[in-house]
Length: 172
Length: 169
Image (cartoon, rainbow over all chains, first blue to last red; front, side, top):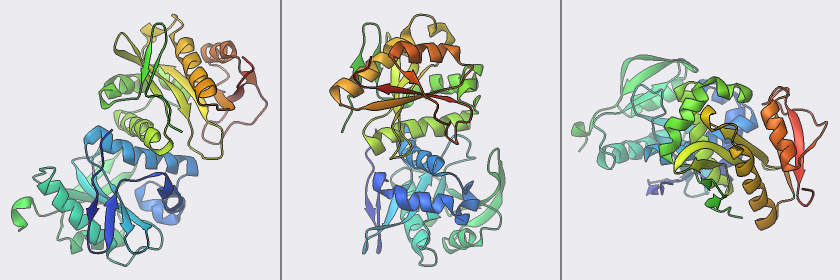
């Protein structure tokens, strides 16, 4: 078991996912908004996905955080470094929970995750993957300064666009 | 409620799963042995499933154990509960065909049953078995489980449901 560090940004607290997060996670994964991340899926599958997010930390030593809206304590997103077995390379991933779109939270949390990946994990480069047609997510990638860098065909999830972030040398 | 990290039996040691178990688990998932649980699975699917097995422990305070024989992981056994309101499911699997036929699965499942019933006071475990999995049906009966007529859950179509209740073994 890996202990999950807590990070803070201006408006968010990035902490380990826990059982109490299942409500918003299940709501997101059962909704049409999950169509870009392999959903919608059953509640049973959503729970397995949540458990898998936590287990990823143990397997990789890093993973995605619960991005909690500090002012309200609500779960705004699941965001952070992510590298399942069949990913082309480690990525910074972001899923906003329902009702938290359009507030800049994905960008804010992903910036902190990029800093963590470069400064703490020692990554030399980082990508993010977006599903075709997910313009909201593409806009986050652009706001982060990422550039399109080809595409990736996933066995189960199909085609994904690759976005490459500026490396650590470009960040001061 | 926190389950024991380690359960010992005469021949086996059950411990919480560790990242080093992934290769043995993935080999099982890729083999025809996983057909009873909707396999075989790709290495990527095995990674996701194993990550969920690890995370289950943190979300619930209990989960499935890695069954080890002289330090070598040979399978998993323990309760699985993906939906809060449902009774946990007692699961067991030998990863390695060579480990079959020695009673290890029964020994591990009995030890798990005893820990959750006698130490933690759980009242009920369900056991889901495909009707052509005669090996697991025999183990369910050896554990003292009773076959019910309950319908199979959506995610595991066609399975039989056994109930294992405290105090009836």
